[in-house]
Image (cartoon, rainbow, N blue to C red):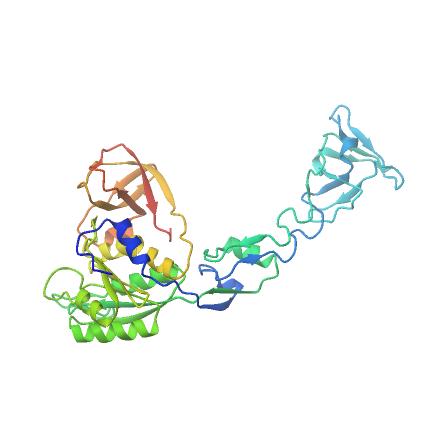
Length: 396
């Protein structure tokens, strides 16, 4: 496939790269409680119904519903405690099994039990009221969890109800590489002209949150041989590679050249019609995604969320989760260039969406923001007071 030299719209670029990625099938087994946030690798079908018996959903009295029809506080229905009478009743607690003779449960507050065993019911109940039938929640054999979805704490409870103690999840491994002569470890005090390695920690955290196994492979200097060696090693041992830095124009830009040398098809996209993040590099080597993100932390974080993670999830066989959206009123006007998609960090204060505007190197804005406002390519901006939709960060 030929390299796309033009500046591409983000959706078109993602489609091109997805077409060259070979989705992973490898999986591993983890304990149920350790599976939260992971990508499930197989369909789960219910092995047993839930509940597995008829049970009461309230504390009260099991009755035959038709004998309560017309009951009121002024004229309660009278049910006798007699084994031979069809209107007999039984006291039950929440979760108790309900014998087949009864078809409803009256809540305690609508019942008075007399000393002779007569039950006064002041409210009618319908058949099935306050009873959960066998299999009403989950029927045996039904699909309860589809492969490719992210396991949430709520789904852990669902699997536990089926007696599941271990889960097969995607074993997708991502290598993170920072590049640049000016980048030093976060533990090092930077000198003038240097900057701490912010991006590898940011990207490692984002990828782990996305359910991937992640390895921070350290910092590679602006040297084509060093980058070639690092990329070859990462591609040999991992399923995808995410780099930061080295993607803007200049003498230190080796990413595209090196990526084309280490395998095919190589670089597919270099340049997106977005702000921030225009110099992003997207490529594939032997079916594995390689993403080169800008070195500026804010640009890196936004492109990781909007570009890298969708590609990695596709490669891992994940079903893309629905974005978390929040409607708010824009506090100030925004101007955007036609033909470009803008991603504006937003802080929410009540119903107000406050744009956080700064240069793409600003890391504090990233920490202060609650999400992003996406300004589409066919829009020249928004006026203050307009109702907008904010895409929230997933970790919120």
